Image (cartoon, rainbow, N blue to C red; front, side):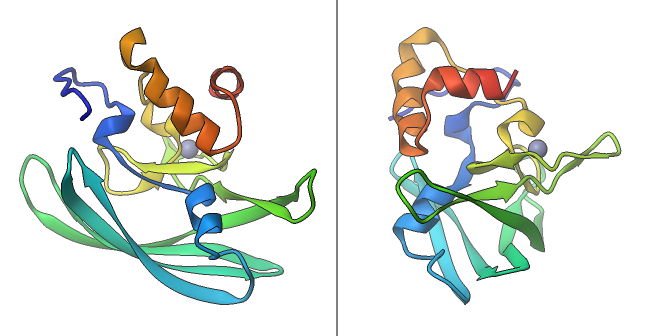
Length: 164
Ligand SMILES: [Zn+2]
């Protein structure tokens, strides 16, 4: 469905992602330590999958990600296994909203942004949109982003503010 774009800047459609909304919908934040697996499909093809372990144990909240990444240029495969911290904030309607803490270190600085979505950009590791400098595609495609952001409970305007 998505159009191919051959610029060297990444767009969301090119990227695998994982969102706390998805994980919450599938009851991974209901307590304790749980494991799961998810796969993506892009343009109708299954393009990858990851395994994960989520701990919502108070004081030890994390997601451990485990997957094989194929370099898109060399086709070399590497196995990745690392954790990112999770945080939660109270919701207006009760319960808690969960966030990833971006695990990437860019130019020697730990990102540590609190985000609802992590992307597997062009790199080996999941990181936030800011770290991967994902681009908005042309205005024709902006509606896709509208629905993506509605999915994580904020408006595109809030997202633009957040990523400034
Ligand atoms: Zn980041």
